[in-house]
Each structure stands twice: as structure tokens, then as C-alpha cells.
Image (cartoon, rainbow, N blue to C red):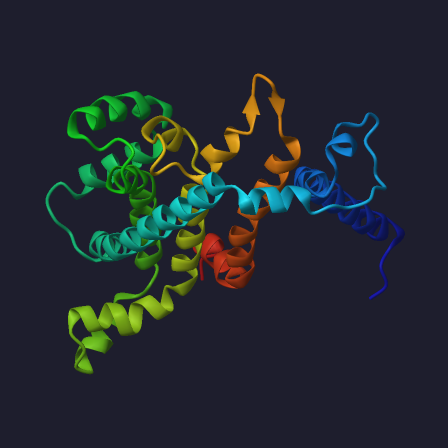
Length: 277
């Protein structure tokens, strides 16, 4: 079938629009990456230099900075601890919400939804006061509990919706074959729910990895995360743009690698339920 002139122009316009939108979102990343390889003079030059001699000085400075290394270490511990607990607690909870009816179920779901809607800024000061009295300021346990409040409702809500789309007949067939309730979840339902798990995992990972507000207010030195350490490069005497750009690039790499690795499942998980058969 031959394409008409109108359809050809529509396709060209659509592709051009996609490229423009992609460049719009990629520009800050590319700009940060370019600054991380520029000298301080080149980074501050006006107009900006598009052709320059690259340097790794900013990356060397970051690697030698003990505060940055410690902040990166804290970010890894907090992110993956929160992610692990969110999945261990959230997946069975989501399954129960999807498969069983119990008193106050709708109220419980409503509270989860409200938890997702509350602005984080509204919780920061109350948490600071409570943690100050409980001795949880600048502790791993305190930060993990805060991040669980952010991630766990999302996992339960998202995976509950995903489990609802899996026919109950699959559960019944697995039990007829001799599987217990736990075996049915682990061996049958979780493999089917891989796309949803991938979407929930990467969403929680990005939210915790990039979190700044609570880390700034509830930590001091021991549990300070990498985003908070990066904010320390801004001072009244000036900004260390090269180091900030280098650290931002380093912080982007794990999320990008993880996202690219599971992007197939992530897209399937986000679009689950969009098409009804």
C-alpha cells in the first residue's frame, strides 16, 4: 500500500517531534556530562564552549573525597535495604489485598492511597521532632523507616493491581498440583508478575536513590547520602560545578544501567492493564 503525501508528512512531523522531546529531556544530562569533563574555566565560559580539551580532574577529585565515598556507600545501603524490605513485605501484602476480602479492606486501601498523596514536605518536620526524641536522627534504621513509608504503599498499590489481573484459576490449578499457598506465590505468581515487580522495583530504586529532602533534614554526618554530599559543593564562596557535574553523572549510572537491564519488563509492567482482552 502506497503512502500518501499527507501520511508521509505526518510521519516526518511525528518523528521530528519525538526527536525534539527526546533532546529536551536529554539536554540536562548531556550538559552535566560535558561540564564534568571541562576545566573550571571552560565550564564557566560564556558563550559555552562546545569544543574543549576533556579532563578527568573532577572525577579524580570525587574519588579522593572521603565524604563523597561515604555518601555513596550510605546511598547504596539505604536504597537496597529499603528495596529489599519493601518487596519482602509489599508483595505478600499486595497478594492478600488482591485475593482476599477482609473487614476494613476499603479503608485500608484508602489509607494507602492517602499515604501516596501526602506531600513529603508535610512529614519532614514531624519526623525530625519524633526522631529527635527517639534518638533516630542520623541512623540507618531511621532513614530506612522513612523510605519505607515512601516506597511500601507504592509497591502494595501497584502490585495489588497487577495481581488482580492474574486469573484465580492459576492459583487453583497450582494448589490442585500440590503447591501450598506460599509455593503458589513464589513458584507460579511471582514469575508471572515479573513485569509488575520490575516496574515497582525501578520506581522505588529511583525514588530512594535520588531522595534529598529527608536525607538533608534527618541526617548529619554518619548517614549522609550522596545527593546531600553533592549539595555541599554549593557554598557562599562559590559553586564547584565540575565536581557537582561529575558526581551527578556517577549517581546516574547505576539507575541507568539497572533501568536498561530490565526495561522490557518495566515497560510491560507500566502498561499492564491498559489493554483489556
